Length: 319
Image 1 (tube, rainbow, N blue to C red):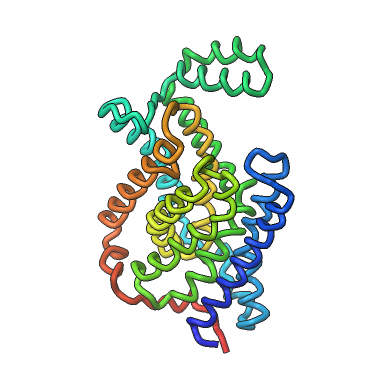
Image 2: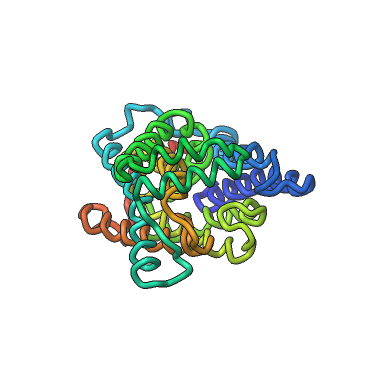
């Protein structure tokens, strides 16, 4: 089977598995507010990995070594840079909101403030929404804590989660996108690979977006925003996958992004869901800026960005 047909076969499996799971959920009227939603979303995340394993082992008949999960393949200094990149995203999104919302006065961006007082207010609101009315006193005691210290602790927790509890779920997606699809397009230029992978990654989320994930109340426009967001984010993921030399780098970056979403919610408020969120306009601006910095700082990756690249170590030994 040639490369284009292998790619189409993998994509058919990925979308077929994930969208079938989501379709079953839709039949039972599962949405983002349903008690079973988190289980459904976790099951959907496993679709690309299952598709990758079926494609690699049963269709391509590649050896297990082609899957590329051995820790010896990891370039650990680049993994350290990946962690730094991951923990930069939420603070940068908050900065965008502070500049464009609080500074420029654009209402859709809402407000952002990294302070103990804001943290205490948000925590009290969350506790109240869950019926824990006696939690206000505890939240008030935290108002005098330094906001930067709170943010730092939350980001450290996100990193810890990325290497532990979040890792299997992130592998569910990344073994597909930065695993099989990356190796199948390893001879392509990074730019060409990103133009393929980013939109596909975004469209793959469509059933969950329609259920209210990320952009509640915007099931159609939300899909378009997710495609834009994933395409921009694919630049960071492709560079990390290339530099770390293993799909584990992308898993860690994905885990930090997902794990730090709660930190964002504690320091931002009153924004439009399509604008003032890590996956909205503010997030897209932050990711675009980070992508530009990555291309500026990584000269080797930048110079190869529009050139076909062959990475023999990551290409499956196919018959």
